[in-house]
Image 1 (cartoon, one colour):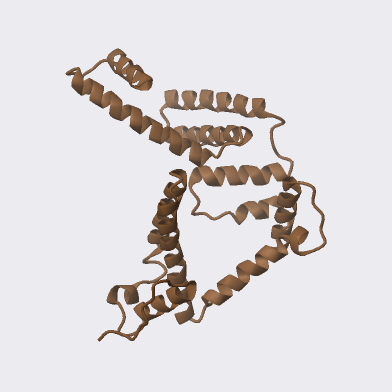
Image 2: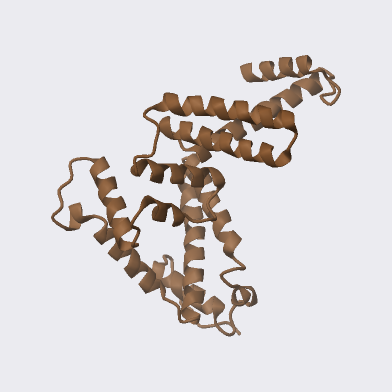
Length: 265
């Protein structure tokens, strides 16, 4: 039996909340009623990545759609939380409003700032105070364990920098990469897998440091490099097919020649 619902040409945020309530209420959608915070956890991640893709494509139509999908996840979680008497969507909105007001004293208070750097310094200090973080080690510990490794490394390094623990310039970071690369080579020669993994991790961590000094996001840079490789590999594979070359049997010189040709295209 269909529930009573007023159809409209335009719907609001309040309508979305009501639609989710209906879907999860007795007589609603069996699938929606079965979901839990854990069961749709990966959905949230997937939808977030799809928003990022829309942003990268500068596609406003796709961005609008994907932001809606993320908003759906937020309202779903809030509805589940309300059923469990944890919190409501209004309380979620209240908390973020309070946070924005508290962390913008230069807008909603009497604090004066002269630059974006001042804003960020104030934001960080207020964040640490409200979260009772006395040291940068406390701030590091608060970084979510679920962050991708490159992102987490860059966040940790940024926290260390705020404590004064950092290279003077990019040269020091570059030299550290060279040092770690040498140590990885030694580990590879030893053949001890645990040492190889340890040194590889140090090399990657050092590379993230370089990214930070270059004002680059390590996660984004690696994603772009991966996409570039995929595109060039596709061209290389096509060129090999056109020339009748079996890539599995071809020499390194032949593959390198195909790759260089692909780069030119």
